[in-house]
Image (cartoon, rainbow, N blue to C red):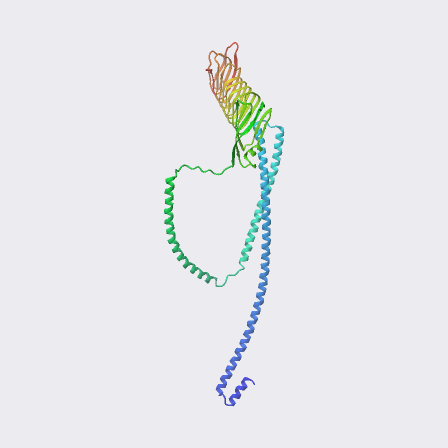
Length: 513
């Protein structure tokens, strides 16, 4: 029986009134409508949920696919990053090797060039230099190509790192913040602000106390140091080029060598005589720059050629990164040939006897004192040449910038100079010929009063001053830019022939004291 029929039956039986029946029927209708609505709403909601689930599954699937692609890209970039970085390390290592080889070749070329400056270069050395220069050019081209490759690899490395960083940022953006993140941060900020205020007050109090304590402590320390320390200027060494210094004594017992050949790039060459049949070489060595060797002495030997036997003493140190100060102690005997050449430094010869001697310094002085030789040739570029207490048959001297000071028994003298004075003082009547020429400088000559002279003096922009005694003028010019004096002092047996010429300087002649 339907609910409506049951209500009518109850009215007929008098159980409920008509009004009550109407109210009951209305309530039954409303309840029915609500049930229908709820059912329909439930169906709609379920449909919506099903649709959301389907959409969520599709989105999740797409996100998983995108995540997989992103991870694959990151893996690929990481692999490329490692490969590029490894290749860059390999190329840089190769550049270091090539640079090391280039430095070695440049050092060898520098040594050969130094040898050429010191002396005439042998043909095999010229060929060796050409070979080194050719190989050096090839290595430099190779290094340039490698450096360009390094730039390309570094640029690619930068691109890969940028791409990797962007992908990581994209991956981080996939994580969503919660909806209440603003409120959470606000609450957290309020709590931290309150805690910070309390902490700040405490730290301010502690800071004031600590500051007061430190001031008192520093004052005490300063007073103590000032009372007990005597302050002086302090020199602070600034790091620069690496340098190694050592001393070494070369000793050759009972050596009968009669030929001496020394070539040094930088330093000092000095010859001394001593009372022994042994030969000793005292050296002070400085090595500039880093050198691959176990000890500085080994590095020195690798860059030097030292040979000593019964015939020859040879010290060849043409490396400009080495400063070698060499003092040779030689037995008292006559040597057949002595040759000493240096680029930067002095040459000193004391109490030595030799038949043939050649001395050359590019930047430095030549000092010859107590020397006996058949021939002495002294060549300078920037520096003075001094010869005193010597007995030499033939003396030849040339220079560019520097003075010649000759006060010795020199029989035949030939001197040429560019900038500097020439001073010749005869200590006896052994001089036979004197030829002196200078461009910018004075010529001063002092001769024995009892010696005959056949002389010619010339100057373009200077003056000729003659204080010789008992001479006669043969010919003379006194023009402003051309002065000449030809003169003679007669002696039946002993006559010296002199020829003096200067461009801008004076010629001064006098009797020796």
